[in-house]
Length: 168
Image (cartoon, rainbow, N blue to C red; front, side, top):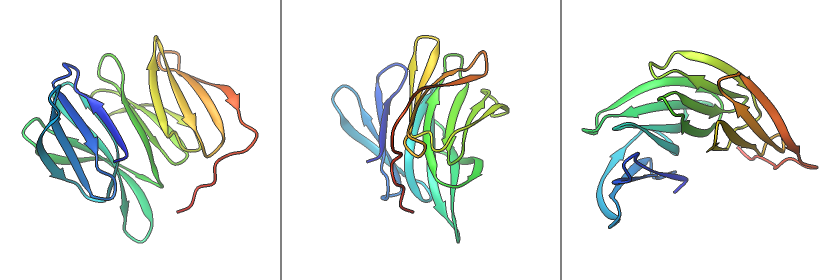
């Protein structure tokens, strides 16, 4: 597994199955398996937006790229955004906007999937909501960042002495 998230009502747990190419759903709090949903590629990250689930996958067709999939409450999978490079992380913001991290960028998408802002970022691997801002870890560039989505501001909180090596 690469990532997991609870639904907004805490009744479902979704697990990104990594190289299994599956998204796993569990009843919460009992953690009873409900179903698995096959997705193309390696499932890196998941997040809920209302009753819908989003999954960020790595796809390889000659070179690695990132694809964002939407999974309806009935399990219907539809392809959304397609980006070059490795996937990073996903986060739903209050109000339904999405943050999508991929190699070289962090995207702020409106609820209708239209791009609001694109921030340069090595590989946004972890995203956490904290009060009115988002905390981001970029292991590729060795930085901890703070994103203020409303202001469109990305600030470095900490720059490490050495970045993590990434093997593709």
